[in-house]
Image 1: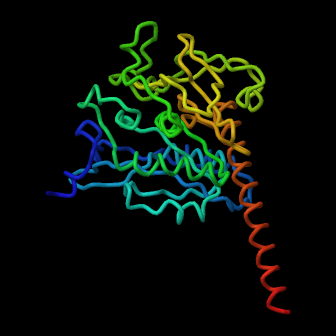
Image 2 (image 1 turned 90 degrees about the vertical axis):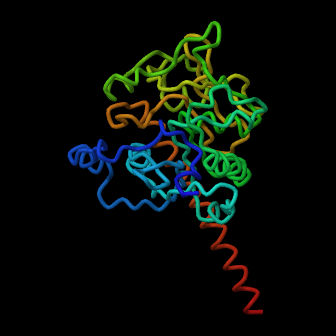
Image 3 (image 1 turned 180 degrees about the vertical axis):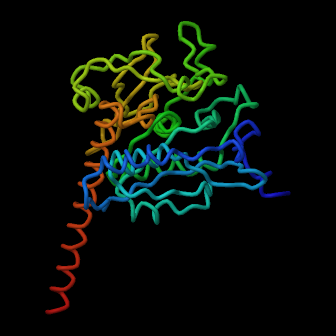
Length: 305
């Protein structure tokens, strides 16, 4: 068995290296100018990678737009977690973490995790990522570490809290087709698609100052049953949940179905979300450093006695 055959993704989720294009240097420079000169990214944010295939080789991948959004928008240091499945020691990772960002992905969350049979087995799955993210979410919450999820990450968080998903939103009576046109240019795929109604006095309303946001729509799965302890923050016109917060989280536990990382610098609402996430990560880091310094001081005092 080759290492490629170990991947749970179908061939439709492979990466064509010859067709891949690096982000234009000018676009990266624009992001760099957004960061105050001399700023130090002291907070560390974990980003779980996907199992993927690059050419003939198995790979752990994170799309650059997600890393850039956290690095420049949240102004945090990014650390990628390989999709090693159950073999990964989550506690070791969280010991160094000040935040967790859960990105989108072409793959679907395994329906067996919420008690259903996979209805569309031809679509890409990523069992190894599932085995990392579900316990990561739960253990990060237990420590009070800030968590931000988008698209697949939004769906993962719902499943981690005992919720379920519509495996094909477009097949559910009364719901719209939320998928992108895969034949269109990527700029069209990620263009604004519909409004979302933001709940009054919600975390999302406070961060953006708005009761309605215009968002893109690039997903086939969506929330069916909302997980326990999650509070809906925004809804699509068809009633589908588009954002929620973790009610018990002490600082930042937010997830959205859309892609705020896309052209983040051109969207004040997206910038507001990533900036608030970064602030929460730095606050967590400061609290952690304070606790460690206090513990060292107490140990030193005991040694002097």
